[in-house]
Length: 155
Image 1 (cartoon, rainbow, N blue to C red):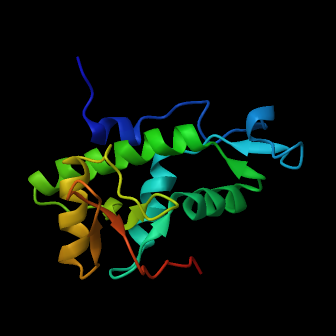
Image 2: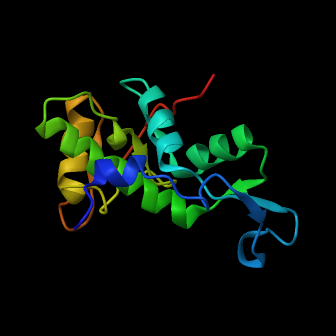
């Protein structure tokens, strides 16, 4: 039976939350020694802290996760996968009338919107615009880039 995103979000995995040796490809010439494999629930918790009117980049989200765990960095690949699970679980929660994690407040480092979120870039833009953000169009006329954003800072 296929698990819902909500089930994936709360599912325990012994590899999540572990700190491992940083792979050479991401070690910044050996400067970064340790890498956190994050937990989806911690990502969900941090996303819920982002206040309306603010956004955070993936790099800053990963940096916060790493700092909290005492690691040099957080795995970018698993963070992206788990953020998508957070986003899909939020949309499942929305359908049930439950409180949702504001995943749309997480953007790519260069201000681009995330095409892997539910509803792809169009829905991501709608949610950001609803909160008052200015979303710019690319050359093809698709709204895909946030400009002049106020980046959220964790306390």
